[in-house]
Length: 364
Image (cartoon, rainbow, N blue to C red; front, side, top):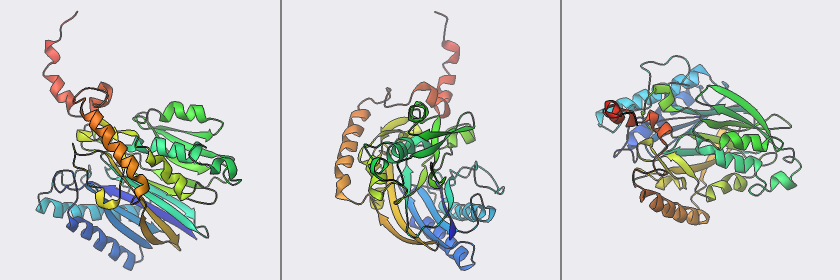
């Protein structure tokens, strides 16, 4: 059976500040998707929240970029935004950068990851959802899961994975893309994705079959709006097992809380903390950045689950290390490398502050 899995998220109002989301917004999402399921527009759905982002997980048979699915998500976010404004939630409608839906939600503010595939006899998938970070946060985990044999032993000993994977990389500043094959173009891949503020892994494909293995949201809010309007808070879908890495191999990269950009005012580097859904409510300096992993089995398009995969004491050490790294970085205050480099601050509110100093600079 061919199925499309779509994950669409938006920050449409925070409780309190940017830390969490009001239950009414989640209920509006559930009611909207319930009606869509009863009408036959979607096969199944799951609605949740990570930090201050409303997350819509949907299965359907309309394919990627389907106008009815994108319209459903947009109208759901609009309804939730109206309620957020009634409650005076912080940043109500923050991710809705357009006044009206134009047929496709891409480039309109919300984050989006979706893939279409033929459902296998067993189809385990993981939905990763992050808060207080940007689209490049998936670069290192996707590299390790699909290209690093020290992380994924299946690359070495599984015949179905031994030929490797192809990475589709987007240059989000130039609006270009390139596909690199691994392991033979591994160094070229690392040359690019080691700069996650510009080069972002959009998708991963099984090199031999061409089957899609993973897809992420690459929307950069600041590049869309031309100014800082909030963190990107990206999502990512990964298919697991058989010709793809096992569930444990896909989760393993998050045992190391790597540094990502975002955190307070989208202007800082911080460690990405893998947490259970109940702990995806960042507060310290509006962080540190969080990531949640919900696992599902697909059955004729129905979402069986979820399993809260980071709700596991095996990730306690990663969380402890994350807090240690966060403490170390916070001691830097406004200094780099905690604060982002000046070229990345261009899309924050810093240029407005610099403007008043412009006329005071003199030649040396």
